[in-house]
Image 1: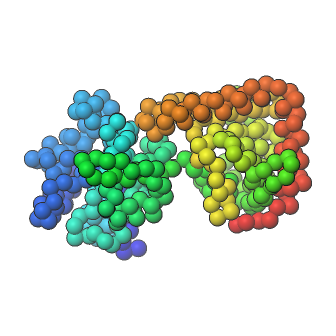
Image 2: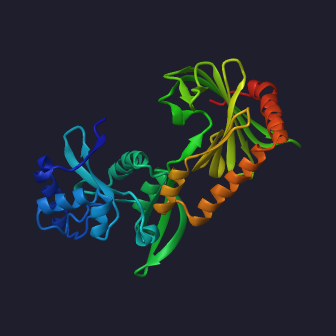
Length: 358
């Protein structure tokens, strides 16, 4: 496409284009380049390059009183014109948590109002996910309607408004940890599948129960020292999304319809988009194996998210509260028997007869 963009880390080969980019802001009487890593303040290109390279390091950025960050140039693929600049902050300090957010960005004045900001942010969100950022905070002044629309188009949900220097700042969160029941998050691993979803509302259960029938995978997933398989050709994943809870359960059935494990994803919330259930993942997971073994997973990821202030203290404590409750239940043989009976029942009686929604 003519307006397709690509993100590239700055280097000296782009010096002329970057200086031209900076000059355009000056000529437009703009003394600030959001997301530019101080481009407007540094006297030389070399000093700016040193600064953004230092910002990649936790130690060096901290010495400057900053958080670690990664800066990208956004080039239009068609003609390699420098369109914008965008910076991803890998963690938040108190100021960024309240006012600045994870991402700062600018489009050069001559290329504005062409939809480039939306596309540049979409690319940056992919990079943020690679950096391990599960939920991205973006902010804008309330009177900047164009920025707000751009954030919303990229999935931003308004949390609140705060006051900074007599201006109203809107704080939007974009979740990158949303996991959908139809397997789209595992598209690199699952090559061919069918998906069904059924809404249940009876004395026994209220919520969504989905069945992902995995016909073909790129590669089997094997875990634990005994190389237990949880993903392979002809496996079925029964996914249970109970109303009012902060977890969902994936029951993994092997090719012989035997249960391989129950995987509990701890979630900020459960929801549904266009008939597809999802969970806003809160990093922490609990695995229960039919023989009674229990594992708690990804504690390091939750701690890192908490340190980045991406997860609040309340969410951090809630994740462990939910996980510990699941673990205590899992130690009870009666609960495991009930869980086996419940998941097997819905696998055969309901999920296998549900209507295909894709």
